[in-house]
Image 1 (cartoon, chains in turn brown, blue):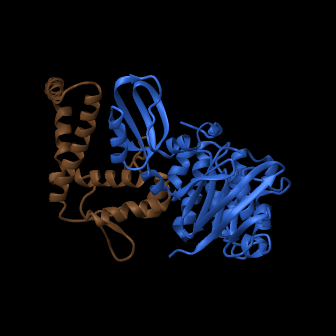
Image 2: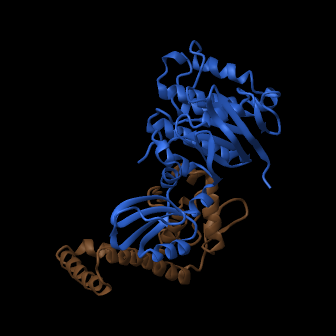
Image 3: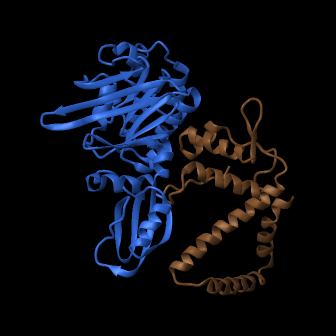
Length: 147
Length: 301
């Protein structure tokens, strides 16, 4: 499972794990029914105390995103779609909040940001169109969760 | 509730005129990882040597598994694995002799586990200790410390002077000790990102005193790093309740503080500022704010 821990950004490690698993589930990279790595395995991979993984999995379970089965495995829960939609919304809101905070710091208004957003989208579309396949691939990726 | 493994109460210790430990209390419960943080000479090693019964508590008390480690070394040391910063080993022995020698002291020696670790580390059992590189010595010391599956693993500056590969081996040994057997680890380190990754509980020691002690998540939740901007440039750092360190200049200041963000926001507003950004502080930021300049020996970055 592709999870990266960044110590410098001030987000507690268990929350980084929770956020990234939420993201992987919302984007379809972790499918319903898929088993999460064992606590020991993920702790060894990330070089973090096993109790941090226990806490992260516990939080995901409390949120209904994963469930434990008899034995010891932890699995992504079914019926993700409403949650996944909320999750996608939450992720994009987080990004926008960070963008707005930074814009505010640089003395851009919300209208300025909207203008830049449109400009960048137009520029990106220009760049993507001569090289069709690459643009197409990106679009496919973003729709994978609907499968 | 998890069993108490270590109970240190009001431990004080002086060497000559230097106060090495000053009324230190420390408690560890089963199944958790305890990180001791502090500059060289702050008192971490002195505390660890008391846990092992290498120093007698002159003032205050030390209990490990309920025993006094000085009066009952067998009851304590048989259940403890220990790697010192110097990783003292008998130089003349070969690696396999070190294993046999260590095994003789431990009823619960797991020879298969020792072999597996030696193989993982690619340590040649026929090599003499004195011919081992620094990293290999650390690995040999680690195998000797964990192959009897100790209930308590104590590592004093385990990463000191080692390259990334061996440091990862040591972190793996910590994870396995906790994950496989639900056992307890106490390790001291000056690498704050390592402590942040590996610890469930953090104890900051500064000049013999416990500067901060608590579950890592609580410590982190209690401290924020907040960026503040003022209407007009300030000639001096702003005075704010709860501020532990203030950096910056002019209109823009970065402040590490404790207490709630709402209280802090109100305090900032009262002196004509506004909060631009705020997040939980990292352990490194908390350490620098709490212990400050005396922390020069701690690696930052």
